[in-house]
Every structure is written in C-alpha cells, then in structure tokens.
Image (spheres, rainbow, N blue to C red):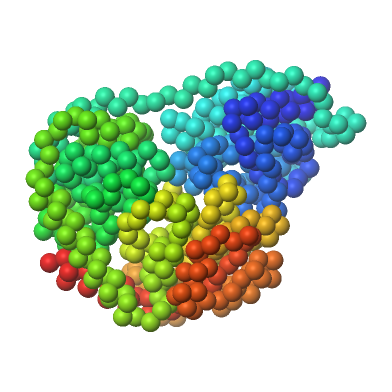
Length: 558
C-alpha cells in the first residue's frame, strides 16, 4: 500500500471538516502530502518559496477566517522553520494544522540526509502532536478529526502531525489512487461553563467599575461588552485590537484613549472600585502597569484558559468565553453605578483625544502618529488594518478613535514579535478581505522575501511602510541612554534601505509618499494587486512628537 492510501483520505477528511486553504513549500519528502492537497477541489493551495513565510501566511489566513488552515513542508530544517509561527499561533490563539513530512523512523539518528528529530519538534507550542507512519497509519478520518478538534478549541491553537514517508514518493503510475472517503466522526469542541458569571455579578453589583477589553478576535464580544457596560454603567477601555472601537455596536461607553489617560495619572485620580479584564493583556503599558501595581483594586479576568494573568494579582478568574459572561452580566439585573461615573470617563476621554489631535496637528506631516491617524481615518467599511508590533500598534492605540465603520484591526500580538508580519498580512488578504498593513521598516526588512509571494500570487494588499531607518521604539526605552555609537549600532540598527525600490525589485509596485491626502487616497481604495507605500520619518523627531502629545493629554485630563 502506498503512502497515498493514507494522505488522500486524510486530506479529504480535513476538507470535509472545513479546511479550505493550505500552504505548501517545495520539497521531495512532502510530495505525498502536496499532490492530494492540490487535487482536493475544496481546498485552495498557496505556493510559497520558504517555510517560515508560508507558516505566517497560514497564520494570517487562519486569523482572518477564524478557521484552521493547513500548512505542510518537507523534512529537516524546513520543519524547524515553522517554529516562530507555531509559537505565535499558540500565544495568539490561532488554529493551525501543521503537517511535516519525515523520513522513516529507522533512519533517525543514522546520519541520513535531511533527517532531524522531528518528534514533538514544537514542544509545548503545539496543542497536539501525532507521529504517524504512512505505511501503517491508522484511521485517517479519526486522525483528521483529532487535529480539527484540538486546533479549534476550546482555545484555538496550532497542532502538529508528523508523517513518516518511505519511498517511492510518487504515486504508482503518477496517478493518485482512488480511495474511499474516510469516515469523519462528529467533532466535539467543549465549551466552558459560564456559571461563574453569577458569582461575578454579586461582586460587581453597585460598584463603580471598569471593563478593560484587550486584544480579541471574537466577533460576539463587541455587542456583549456594550450590553454589559450599559447595564453596569461602566466605561470600557477598548484596546485597538479588541474589536470594540469600530463597528455598528453601541460605542457610547467606549474609551479610546486609555493609554493616554493612564499615562496622565487619570486612574490615580479616578480609581475604579472593581476591574473586569477580558481578552489578552492590553497594548498600553501604562494601563497594565497600573493594574499590576494597584492591588487594592479587585481585578477579575474572564478568559477560557482561566489564569491568563502576567501581572499575578488577579483575585477572580472566570474560565469561560468573555462574550457569554458579559451577556450574562447584562441580563443579571445588577445594581448599576451612578451615571456620573461613566460620564466623567467619557468627558476625560474626549478632552484628552481633542488635545492629542490638536497637538499632533502642530507638527509637519509626516510624523508616525499622523501616518497611523491618516490610515485609520481613510479605511473604508469592511477593511482590515493589519498592524505591526513595536511602534505601529502603539501609534494606532494612540490615534484610532471610535467609528461606525466595520473596520477590523488585527496583529500578531500573541508573542508580540515582528517576525512574519508581511506574510501574515498577505495571508489575511488572501481571504478576500481588503487589507491595509501598517508596518515598521524593520518588520518589512525582516520579512522582505514575503513580497515575492505577493508578486507571484498577485495578492491585493496595501502595505504602508513607515521607514525611520531602524528601531524607533528603542528611543523610548532605557537603552536610549547608552553610548550613542553603541545605541545606533545595536539598537537603532540603521539599514539605509529604500523600501520602495526593494519592493519594486521583488515585483511589487511601490512608491514613496510624503503627502497626507495622497496617503489617504492610497489606503481608501482596494488595489487590484500588491502595492507598497513608503513613508519616510525621523526616529529622533518621533520622540518629541510623542512627548508633546502626552504632555497635552496630561494637561487636558486635569
């Protein structure tokens, strides 16, 4: 029996369960995986030149569709290249089905070429690991269902199937065998009980509280949070990645300047009596630092995994889906806080945002916050803003206000790295969404090869690359105080690249823009293919802009 008697029904079972996209890279040992994927009509196959980029592309596609995406590769270091994306997927709660081809177990440790130890290669980053011999694999339907179940939940995660293939690697006669469809058991995705919402309701009743909504991809969360906030009469500090700042839900209680308010000392002067945190840790360091330091304020975290708390000061952990708990709180008949509590937050939020915008307007365009603000205002209804870690996500936090347009803001904030940013944004765009990627220059340089995929597959995407010639965020960190020559060499890391020229050299149309209106026009309309827009800024000047904004916010908050 050839390996294809396992891989053909396996791929068919995954398609039956709901896999619609697969990313593949060149390799010989993975041929028994690739040919069935290409032949499966329910799966769109995406060709990539390198494994690291392929895995991040799959991650972006899975995040955009909220559905497991398959990514497959050959044996050896190719499999190791998947690790960064697998780590991000685990921490970012993204469902990936990672399938690595391997040589037969008898060749492990013998010095056979392109053979490494792939057993549990990703360690704890994979929620499930299966090692299968394609010559005696077991039931492909059950294997597919186990992968699907573990990838989806109750907390989405990457899973790893390692398949040992012996030669011959091509199907007999070059034709895939006709194999009966594998029976697929009904997937069992457990859902956590939200009964603890009753106890939480007792704790918050009558208190002046605060909801902190961190990064989340749950489409049910905005309406549920709005309902709970209205019932409690509580303000909601909405992270830009929470999904709460934009959309048709009730946004009256949403606070979009939580970072500026926390940095201005507003929380010290107007401290809540209780805090409920949903989603991941918020982007704003002043905000989560305040939560960590003020242990006298009770903090409850609502999260499917329970104790998701790097501050180590949570007093109540509700292991349930946040949307379900917030809906239960909205319906619990809780005694609300006085209306003046939420009104004071809304007034401070408006004052701080107006002061920040006015201050930003005194600087000549382009500044990095002004680029983020321009992009945010120009995004059309239904667009996705895929934002890089480091400074871009912080500038979006600073400038992205509430809007009725259904704009989704997403990022790789599981492990908070810049690795694979362009690839992930391309994956999101491959879902058919109008994607605008807001990137720092190091994010683009780190993943420059992904532009080859953009050109090869002609994926429609607009990449706005802010080029300040290095690592701008380090100017805000203690490392800025080291010897200037050391700082520039090892932290500032100037590269001197013309990103627009580099993109054109890789086949992606590009241009440099220094005009606000031209940037807004470039962002507003979906392109018919990939394009890169480079905006050149100054790292040192960016520090002065941020300092002026924070000083104005501090004055306005009083």
